[in-house]
Amino acid sequence: MDFIVWTIIIVLILVYEFVVCPKICKRKISRYITNLGGEIINIERLTIRDYLYCVNYVLDNKTEKAIVQFNIFFEDTWR
Image (cartoon, rainbow, N blue to C red; front, side, top):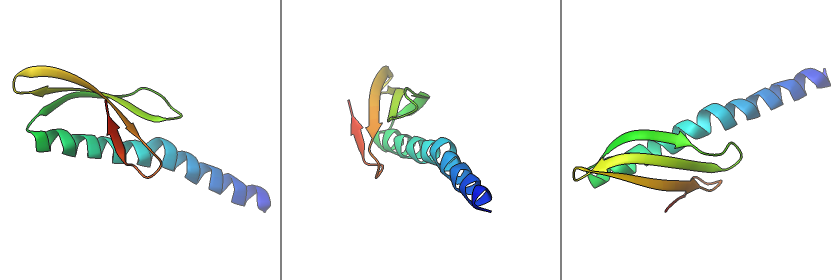
């Protein structure tokens, strides 16, 4: 019985890590760029362990590139 409980817990953690977190991060990135008046070309996750994303976007007819890092509370740091 313990095996089933631990398996369910591990599956839930993996779903959260690989499905839910990337959706939240991409939604926050998209919202930030559209508030600036830009259009997103590509969002790419750079690392599995860290929430680090490379964002290509167009702002004022210029292609820009930014690196965004999220912490555990999904607060973003743009570079």
